[in-house]
Length: 334
Ligand SMILES: [Ca+2]
Ligand SMILES: [Ca+2]
Image 1 (cartoon, helix red, strand yellow):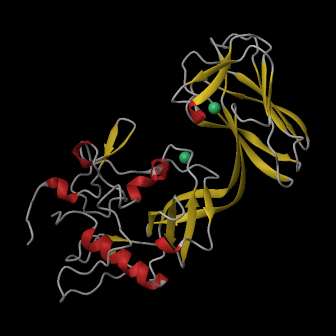
Image 2 (image 1 turned 90 degrees about the vertical axis):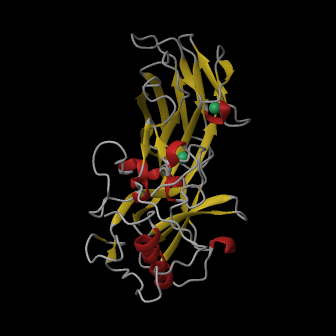
Image 3 (image 1 turned 60 degrees about the vertical axis):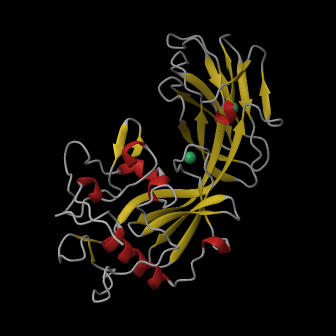
């Protein structure tokens, strides 16, 4: 049995359980995952939103368990009819019947750095020192759903990571969003080369990781990050102390159009699978926001068996090309 439906929404590359089947980021519902190959039915106005730029880090749009239209490695994709050839993986037609509107599977989809990270939370049992006058608060928007805040000038809160080997790290701070937070919170970073000062707008940058800078830390516990409640004109009602992370960037990955995300039940983690000359796996250690940040991807040379399809690189790429051409969206778009 098959159905025929000429509705415009059959052109979309997204089908989720969200409202209208779209993928929502902020206040926008998205209809397309890939750049317009030239035949998108909607190219401006409503129903025309293509996930682009950093929004491509919202990985569930590229995961078939969430976006039912996306490539599912468990499926073998075939041409519509036995008389039709497989899609050409080096020049994939958007619509298999028309020799136009090609997509390059090797073109960049987005780029990310990967590595490892150490997160220190304000509620950790070790590696935390603080002055008096910090209020302990439970708040769903905080890292670990708990944070600390103070309104008393001179209060200090210090995170002390245990650094495994002397390396250069990015230092990021997370502060639960509150519009009355300190807009110029002062951080003191003790690193291998001395002491540095950096600032974060805990109001505007609340609810996200904010990069303070990149520093080298000696192995051990001699490095630290301290936030100090200072008396200044934009100090707000509170200065927040929530979490700090130390990210060691060991490389970057150019994610090409031929990629997908998959969940490993055995590892309890999602993986990014990139088809760029080889099948490359990256384990994804999310902080809970479904958004890939620096340090959350770890290259995995021995991925769990439950996400390995058994296809060669060429076979997987062929299957992806067939999906792109024959099954990426719901039907003919012209
Ligand atoms: Ca916290
Ligand atoms: Ca994340």
